[in-house]
Image 1: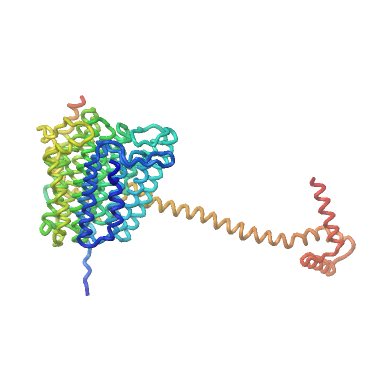
Image 2 (image 1 turned 120 degrees about the horizontal axis):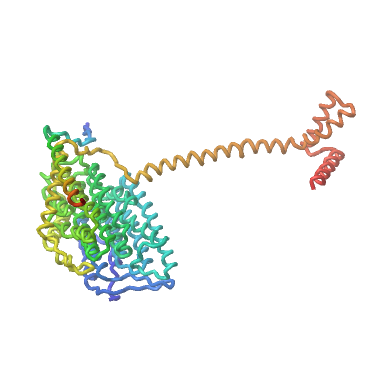
Length: 590
Length: 43
C-alpha cells in the first residue's frame, strides 16, 4: 500500500502543476486529480501507511479506518464537484488554493498522530484564506485578515494542547483523549474554533460570504467538517458537546432570519447544522456517531449545492442581498430548482438526504432520554427550514420582482449543481449505500410512518409560520447592514480596546516625556550648571560680608566666582576650600 | 450621462389586511395546544 501516492500529496503536489497547463488540458488535469484520489482511496484497506520517523516521533500520514474513509470519500467527491463548478473561473490562485485546501482536509482526515494533524490543520487555515482573498475586494481582504488571525489563535491553542498532551502522555497518537486536564481543553478549544462552536463562531459568517463564488463551496465543505471529524475522534461522549451543540443549533436561527446577505444566511445555517453534529458526538452512542458522520456527509453535499446555486446568482447578477434580488426564477429556472433541492435537503424533507441523516441524531437524543435536547433539536429543525429551506430560495428567486433578467450560469456550473442535486435525492431515496460505509453497523430505518408524518407536520407548520409572519407584517425587514454577534468583541470591542490602550499608554508616554525629557532634564541641566556656583557662594558670601565687602564690590565678586566656575578657572584657594568641605561632608556622612 | 440607480436599503414586509388577526388567533391556539401537551407529558 505504501507504494501508492499519499492521498493529500495528490492534491497538494498536483496543485503546483496547475499553472503549467492550458485550455481544456487544464480542465481535464484538474478533474483527473480528484478521480485519481478517489481511485487511491477505494484501493486502501484499513491500516496505517506512509509512516515517517522524525525526531523520535512517527508521523503517520495514512491511518485508514471506517471513520476516516467516510470523510475521505466525501472530501474527494466534493473536490471533484467543486473543481467542475470552478472550471470557467480563470484564476489559478483560486484553483491552487482549493486543491491545497482539499489536500489539507484529506491530510487531517488520514493523520494518525497529532503532529501530522497539526501540520495539515495549519495548511487548511492558510490555503482557505486565499479563497477569501481571491475575491479581491476591500471587504474580502479585511475578512481574510480577521479569518487568518482567528485561525492562527485556534492553531496555537491546538499546538499548545498537543505539546502538553505529548509531554503528559508520552504518545502523539491521534485518538480518543476525552475532556480531562488543561491539554485536552486546549485541544478542544482549537478544534471548537474550526467547528465554529459559539462563541468562537463569528469568523464563519464573517468570512464565507466574502469568499469567491467557488471558494465558498470549498469553504462550506472542508473546514468545519474536518473539525467535526477530529472532534468525533478525540471527544466522543463529551457531555459538554451536547449542550454546546444544542445551543449552536438554536442561536444562528435568529441571526439568519435578520440577515440580508443570502450567503450569510447560509453561513448561519451551516453553524446550525454543525450544531446537530456536535450533539451527536456529545451523545457518543453508535447511533449518534453514525448520525453525525452521515449528517456531515449529506450536509457537505446540500450545503455545497446551496452555496453553488446562490453563488451562481452572484456570478450572473453580481448581487446577493435579499434587498436586490427576487423574481429570478423566470430566467434561471434550473438554478432555482437546484437551490430548492438543496433547501429541501437541509430542511430534512422526506426523500431528501437530510431526512435520512439528521433523524439519526434526533433519534439518538430520544433513545438517550434527553428530552430537552430532543425538543431543542426539533425546534432547530423547524428553524432551519424557516431560514435555509424557505428564506433562501424565496428571497433569491421569488419574492418581489427585482427586474433582473440574468441567464443561467455556464454549463459546467449547472452540471456540478446537477450532480450534487442528484446525490441529495439519491441518498434521500436510497440511503443504504451511505449507511453501509458508516463507522458502526446500522439498523436504523428512517422511513417509518410516525417519522415521516411527524417530520411533515413539523415542516408544514414551519411553512405556515413563515407565511403568517410575512402576511401579518411581523417578519423582520431585511436591511442593508452588517449584523454583529460575538464578532463585536474583535470588530468593535477590539477597536475600542485599541483606542483605550492608545489613550492610556500614549497619554502616559506624553506625560513622561514632558516630565522626564522636558522639565526634569532642564532642571538637572540648570542644577549642574549653577549648582557649583551656588554652593561656592553659600560658603563665600557670608565670609565676604564679614570682612566688609558690600554693594557693587560684593556683586562684582559674585560675578567673578560665577565666571571662574563656569570657565573652570577658579582660584586654587577656593578649589582647595571646596575640596576640603567636600571631604569633611563625606567624612561626616560616613 | 449614466443615471445611477438607487439601491434598496430595506426590504420591509407590509401586513396584508386581516392576517394580523389570523396570526394572533393561531398563536393563541398553538400556545394552548402546546400547553396541554406539556401538562399531559409532565404532570
